[in-house]
Length: 482
Image 1 (cartoon, rainbow, N blue to C red):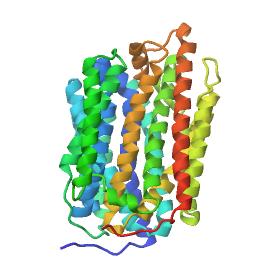
Image 2 (image 1 turned 45 degrees about the horizontal axis):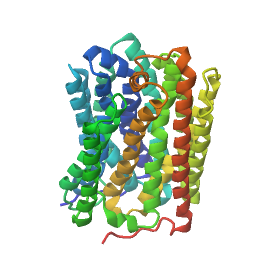
Image 3 (image 1 turned 180 degrees about the horizontal axis):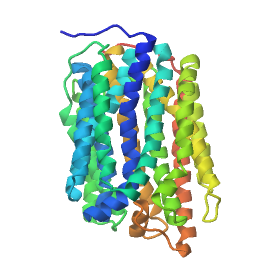
Image 4 (image 1 turned 90 degrees about the horizontal axis):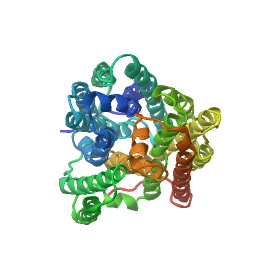
């Protein structure tokens, strides 16, 4: 029998949102903190240059594949229960990462960590939808964005200090006490408020999508350090074939990984596609800017990352305000404005030069943080407002899937674009922070980065256009799934 509770009071909801923010924060910490540690992990474990990147990509790939499935588990067995399970899996994965002994072990344990991250992130959005009525969700998602921004800042500050003065292994050990505190708070403070619904997992579809994405990503990352050959073409074509198989499976499966019926809900399609293209355009920015600061300006990873902190702080401050605007004026306005502001940030970054004042990096970071903090809570609110209540978990998972697909390929795109102007091997080494450029190559490499920023501008403008089309649709109308 399903046990649910009525929505809590405003005070109870506030306490619950803090617990959810902790989960989002710890996954965000792990996103930025690991990037700073890549050079040390590479040297300590003697990881090959083209393998170290899978410490980041593998984590994101697992979250991408599991997002809808663990959201479905939340609908079946309780979103809070799956959220708490995610905390535990994340803590175990973190401890194992700290104990890793070679490249295979660190990548494998990061995959396990990704399982926990998927359970936390996919169910957090559904928990908020259960806790708050439609007219208050935008502000709640804004506070959720605060958790992400604070986590990213903590990742930069803690990561730089830990890698510099202690050991890279402590970037994973630090997750253990934070995660255990989060689990304890969740067990005591969170309660189920949604009705449970039976589902079946789409294991065939998930496998097909996983093989497809892996094949394409493997080819793209290898191409960053190796010339194109028959093996890479085989991986690329095989990946595309599995993606095609995935589409066929989804059209014939009773409960597909990507529930195509949700695309008939007004405003759902543009919201999901806006998230996809925003991730594709924006996730690479962090790494492109760090490549510029480390490769061209020869800053250390910690000094490079500190210049991006103001943007995350602005994001933390603006998120709740943007969420409130989404509640008051409908999500399309702050979401679209946020994407337009991010286009401006990319334009600022596209004018970085070897002798540019570093204040321009800070300015770009602040503008980008302002835009992102407007987009994320409003777009999340739009998806969950449009979703039928019985599909909150699936809808939240689909949102994470689309965003993460964009993020995964954005990461790979950054490497490929950087290797247009200098040797692939050198570009990859700069990307993970294990070397810097000679001054004679700085101008050439910077021009390659400019091309990447202009490409991201085009993708971000497309995301803004898709977001704006929601103004012509039935605003936020929900309908039940067939």
